[in-house]
Image (cartoon, rainbow, N blue to C red; front, side, top):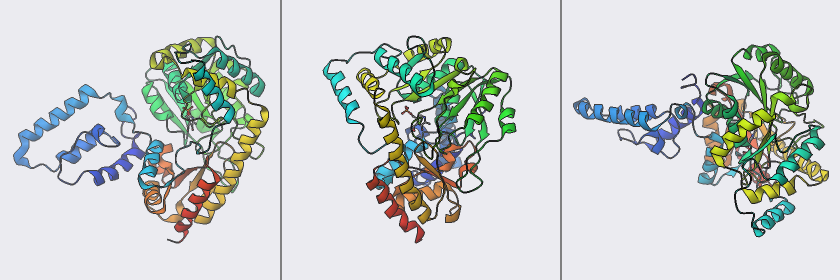
Length: 463
Ligand code: PLP
C-alpha cells in the first residue's frame, strides 16, 4: 500500500523506544496488537522477538514465523497497519502515568455551561432515552440550520442537508467514506490534525500533503505556496480538507486563501471538506469564513462542526456534517451503519447550546485569549519559540533551542522529568523529520492548570 512505512513514522519511532523498554532482549513477545499501545507495524515486532532465537531452533522459528504471519494475514487488515494509535491520546495516558500536567490533548478541564448541562438532565428526565432519528434530532438540525444562517449567511435545509454524528470525528470519516473511492486523492495541509491521515487510509484515499510554512517573522502567519497547492490537484483529486481555525498551527485561513482553494476546487471539480470545529475561538480581530459561504462553493462543500470545542463538552460526542442533498444522502447511509445515531439526550442539549446568546461566544473567545496570553510568556520564558495562534486553542512551538535529538526524546523528558505533557510535532506530519523541532501545547485549561505547568516549565530553563 502506498503509505506503508512512511505513515507510521512518528508512532514507529516513538514505539521503537517504547518497545525497547517493555520487551527485554532475548524474550519472545506477543504480536504488536497485544502490546500496551500497539504502536508500529506488527512485522517489526516479530523481527524484534525472533532475531534473538538460535539457529538450532530453525524449525521452531519457521513455525513461529508462519504462525505469526498467518495470524497477521487472517486477522488484521492491510489498512490498519498503515497508521499507529493516536499520539495525542497516548500523551494523555502518559500524563496520567507520570502525574504530569496535561497540555497535550485538546479538552477543557473546566465546567461546561450550566444551561446546557441542565438541558441534558432535562432531556434524560423527559425520557429522551431511545434512538434519535438516525441523521439527527429535528430540534438540533433546526438549530444548526438556523445558526449557519446567522453566523455565515449559509441557507441550509435541515431536512435534507444535515447529518448529526458522534462527534465531528465521525462526521469526517463518514464523509470521506461516502465520497472517496480507492485510489482517489485527498489534499491535506500539513502539519495536520492527526485523524485526517488514518481517515484517508480507511476510506481508501491517498493523502496529498501541502506544506503550511511557519511564520518567517515574529507574529507572522503560517502560509502555503500557491504553486505547491496547484500541483497537488489533478484528475485523481476527490477532495481537499481545510481546517480553519487550524489545529495545530492556530492559522485562520483568509478570504483570499479560501478563494484560491475555491478556484482550484471549481477548476478540478473537487469537493471541499471543511473542519470548522474551532469556528468561535478566534483572536486578534480575525474572522472565521466558512468555505460554503463563498460563491459557488455551497454545492461542493461539506462543512463539519460540533459541540466539543464551542461548548466544552468533548466527551458528549455530538458533531455534524452539512452538505448538498446528494452527498448528505450518502453520508447518512454511512453514518447509519457505522453508529445508527448520536446520543439522543445530548442532541437535545445541543439544540439548547446553539440557542445561547451572542455574548456566550464573545466570552468564550476572550477566555481563550486570556489563557493563550498566560501560557505563551511561560513557554517563552522556558526557552520555547512560540508561533502565536490566531484561532483554536493550541500553540505550536519551536524547540531547537533545547538541543534534544528530536521532539519525541524531548517530549519524554518533559512528561517524565519536568511534569508537563505536550504533543510531539512529528505526529502532525507525514515525515517525522518535518516535526522533529516542534511541540504543541494545548491551553484549553484553567488558570491554575496553566500556572502549574508554568511552574514546572521553569525547571527547563535551569537544565
Ligand atoms: N477536528 C479537529 C481539528 C480537532 O482538533 C478535534 C479535536 O481535537 C476534532 C476534530 C475532534 O472533534 P470531535 O470531538 O467533535 O470529534
